[in-house]
Image (cartoon, rainbow, N blue to C red; front, side, top):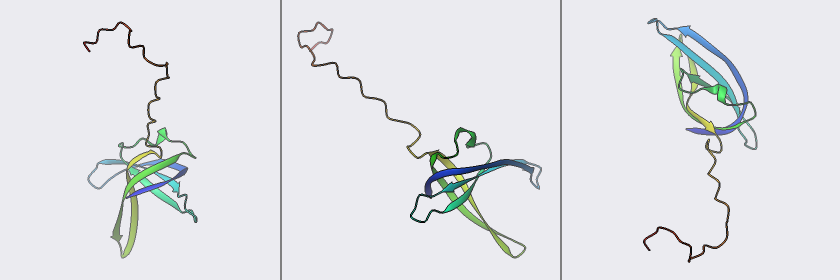
Length: 114
């Protein structure tokens, strides 16, 4: 799923160690949708795949994510996990068109065979 919105908060990086001894890293951020009735969604980024420090609060983002729920001691917990985050404009601007230099002179001397 994808969600477009404005980055309104970057939360601190959390680290820990799992049952198997592997270390983990997680950072959460809050995105606000631009709907008629804006919604705030807290989204988690796991590991080092996405560097959230490249984004600034107030920036428009497009986030691709998965939603997953799990049960623990009779209660259900839901996570929104991002797997791709890019600026809303796609992350890259189109190259500028070359400046117009006037009509081409057909009598110009060039090395083209035609």
